[in-house]
Length: 186
Image (cartoon, rainbow, N blue to C red; front, side, top):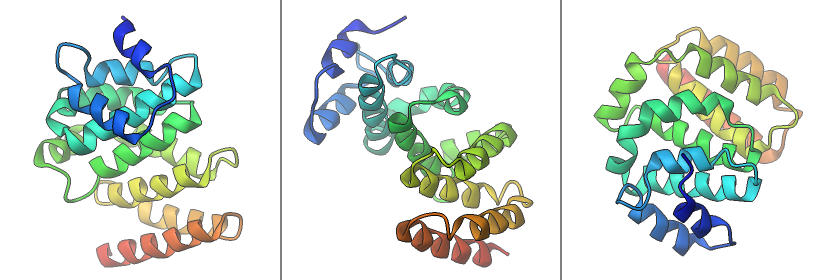
């Protein structure tokens, strides 16, 4: 069910300070991280983007409010088609898959069947319509999940070789960082 109070709060343009304020009240009686996930799929892409932006802030600044909805987020993750919201989704998953993620998150990721997530993230990585900022976080996710799926390393190295000349300088810099990360783990 749509949270209409939250929807009214994010229908208008706002700045980071409002995002932080809304993130701080998430999961109080007003709305939860689940409401933000649901609204990130809203038909108005700007509303979806703002909901995802607030969701990212909930994850980074109020993680205890995000934790009850980790599995819901993982289920919804592959379905995100709003490219502006997707940037925040992949950033959240990049944080969740890091080796220094909180123990509760690491356990969920370890127990979760991440095969489909890996497939989707690889598909986004090679999709020409996906913005480079999203692809950058996709690289992090795949490199992080290499610890769970050791076949990712070779596939990711080949994919980066293929993409490095097709993307921006910023992407090239990220590829250097990911290569270093992958070589440390091998």
